[in-house]
Image 1 (spheres, helix red, strand yellow):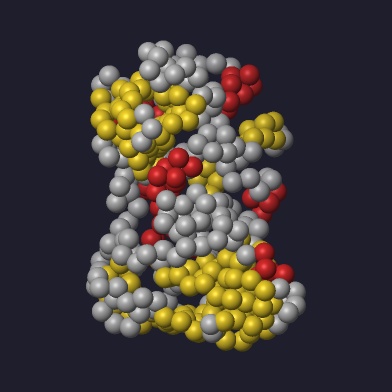
Image 2 (tube, rainbow, N blue to C red):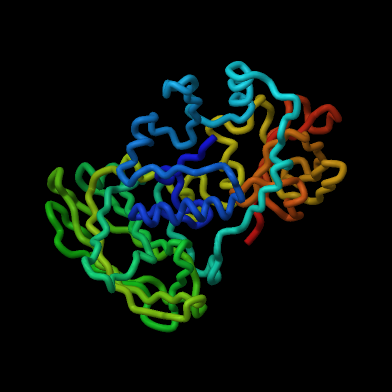
Length: 378
């Protein structure tokens, strides 16, 4: 078995943003191994995303390939139970079924080098799509990495005439860098406008009261494109620090933004932006439960976790509609917390959770939770 690391389907999940080079993608791969605690070997798709394109462009696909190289099973969305049934048909059943809890995966959180939630997120429309960008790489051994990466998105009007473009500068967690708020805030300037008019052509981020944070710096621009080759250059200046290595530097870098949709850009999952699906509670329900979610049907529910009895496998959830309600969690339930595989004992009171239960009502002792997903309140 192998994991294949592809372009990010949901940039910003757990703070991670799309890498710009193969070296950075391999750094992300090592970070994924560290945070997930897996021992299954990983393969990395190239920066041209050839594997992703050849295998159907699905975000969480699954394939069984025979010894002769032929694809025996193709699934657009990974479903472990279906995979087991496929392997039993092809190879045979096993006497002992390994559960996730048997693997004792030592999951670790993403790095958090400074506070977050300091700078409010922008309220964005829900019809934005990733745009193609080119980071301008300096041909110098002294050139700095792109500690902060630009994510550009545009609405339909931006690619067809008049519209709006989102510019978001996101710190890449792999570099353990935070903003230095004791000096001038991040600023940008639009230059080299080709077949496009951009307003405003410059801007500055807010100046937080905290000395450091890792929140993105975001802007909304009005654009009027006048041709298929419409593009512009963004020059950004900011101050970043790495406390582990003991440095703070001024960084100036540029990007070329093309008013063309990037099919490999993914769809960002954001909290607090006002776009549909935003908010931590909504994210807790969306990540993994949609696009097929835990198999076996069932009903969705959710709320705030009131109490948990890991030994008896009982969770009590508080909802606005029904008050307190208790559920028994199946031993085969798929569970995730803060975007990572979890055990029942990992969940904490006050977590915002979403759960999927069997068709029977939650009060029925035969009803069981078959999928549980939570997010801590930060």
